[in-house]
Image (cartoon, rainbow, N blue to C red; front, side, top):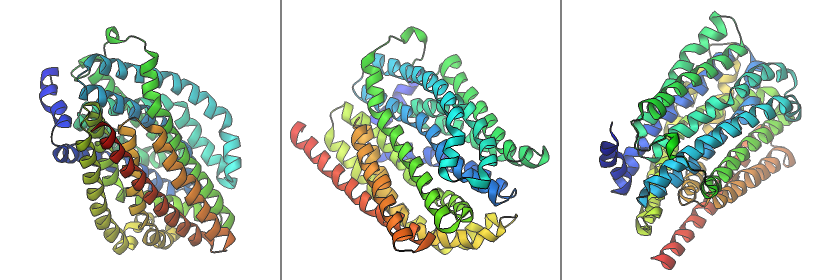
Length: 456
């Protein structure tokens, strides 16, 4: 693909009809996220064969691993938003330079992050109440955190591709990661008899392969719209600030979800032991599959809104947000019905192993927690809109209110104070999420109205 061809296809797509752009940008992201969720689920399924402690170990590491993924996604969201705004304003020089600055941040943060996680991981696991699962969690976590740069670079690199509308190749990169991990998991865990360490190495090796693909396209073949030649790099504090204005709040949002996972695990251990954590870990990974369309719509919205904001087309921005929200709610209804009706069949993927007794518990969790998809839709799409216009702090505040305050508050009240046990915790997450989602949509709607009223 030449640069000129990219201008005439991908770039014009994000500047054109918002309905067409949302749909065309969303579906490759949905495929990508499905594959990523599939390989996360593959980890759980294969590790489940090692016993409840091993599965619980994945549950304790997952919130921390999401911090790692959040760093990549945060920098990527910041770069995506700023690049899209520069493309909307026809400023290719700053678009190129922004992409290069995001890669500089990737290297710096990856090195520092690996060192910090190696030092504090044992203490964090103790704080989380890992108990007998701590040894497995350390074996898994130390490996994936050591190679943090692979995962962060993949997150930033695919975001750079999406910012210029090249969603198909971003999908291919994520597909490589998922397919390799799904194939390598049983080989490393069972055939090579590496146990939970094998699951970690399968994840890392898969990430290396996809990172190599990105490096080839963006830095050697150089057939992207953006030109990532070092000659185009000129250090700019304002660009770093522009990326971090979205990246830091976006990363902090992922920290919130990680903290939420840690707190929910702690509450579940308190009321029902590590078996409840294993159930919640497996069940929520299955439910996250139903949220894939929402992630696709939200990521597409971020790019379209960024380009609309850069072009000062605020009516298009409003229409894009409303259209995406409607699509999200429609798809959420379909997914909720499917997962509720087929929860026993869906949970049966865990019925093959020594963790088979968890399957009925997981099915019950799915039928309760699937309602949470509506809350996720309201919160996620609103957050992506704010990130697209560069209002990362607002997105962070809304996520904090929804997840770390309301969901935790009601989980504690129902699960502990009202002595409703693990199901009380599930009800609390749902209620807190709904209230927070409604607050998010209301805030987003008023913000867009002010934007149109003030700047027309």
